[in-house]
Image (cartoon, rainbow, N blue to C red; front, side, top):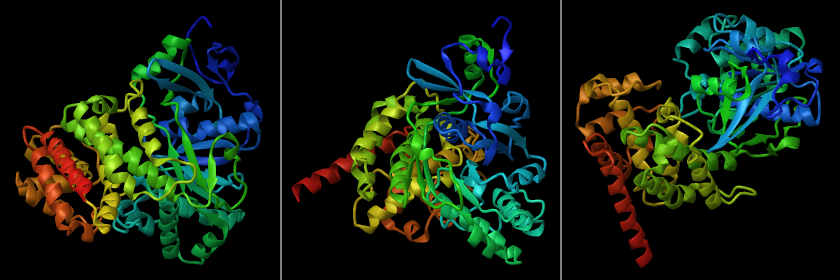
Length: 507
């Protein structure tokens, strides 16, 4: 190639030999599924699995990518014919591959109509989603639809012009019922527990309120399998985009970055045909729960812990946080000594080995996952990552010296972002304003801050919030985290944990 060209179908045959490309004829690829939320994770995970499958067992499983929130894709992924470069990075190693499984992209930010046209099409047999935790408009502590959510209020009043993901899916199912009646599998790939159950709950709740027998039709013609997905895919930077041009000689505005590790566990609950992703590494099971608990409580629990405590320690990336000697010891001991005991057996997996593997992945210096990015929407994550294992330990009469510290870390992260505490950093969390209001009204009193924040019942189960041991441990940690020596909370919790270990050894 002489002049710098932009990635697209015409460029495929002239890519450098060091860039892998689709091993099938994209011109013959028809659309059989749609995906909501075509961000970096989807492009590094489900789209790659599908690309692998098409290379091995070609079928009509091209993806129509739909974005209903920024950014717009028409000028990047759309202009490139759905093609993009997936870079795998591990320390000094880089592997480039062009993924071809996305056949078309649709921007539906201004109106639901373009998305509904795709979702209601009889050609679409499967819808997958990565819309983040808050995209489900659910209450984190219960998994039920948040009827007070502004988008849900709108969709209940105007079901034919929905704004929310649950509203769009409910409307699409209604349109399918009215036009062709073909069944649909709706597969959540978001990192929330029982994601299929939650998706089914929010859609059925809207359908019940719509009436006219829609909820019964959905029960007979749609399924909502749960899935556990895993691959670390940080936000793409301009430097990442520039690196493709510098290293491989072409432009790509839709680059995706990921680590080598990937995993996908899918519940066998399909309404019709499904892609045979199990032929290319996915696992089909009857119950996803043990896998998702292991991943969320170990890997994701470690990420949330390192992210919030890392920010408080002045560290930018996950690999910076886990390289810190104090935080490294803390997170490993938290997982091994407190989290693992809350997990049920996982078929074919050794939880202790999974801890070591997970911590090793977080040390990958080529995955520049910013702590602030991981801390985004923390209120939607801490229930499954931290609060549920804490509740399980308390129910069995076990100590909780370590797990409450990152809970206090989440509180401190939002408190220090409030005007009362100097607005130290910008945050993105649905509960940021509420915590800021609590901080403004309460000030520096850690006990009062904890009491008020634990009163947010949509996050904190009242039974857990009332537990004296939990309240005392969180309060003690928060007091230190808001001081001039925030890592004192980490040191003190490790000392307390060591004391408990010695007590147990003498029994």
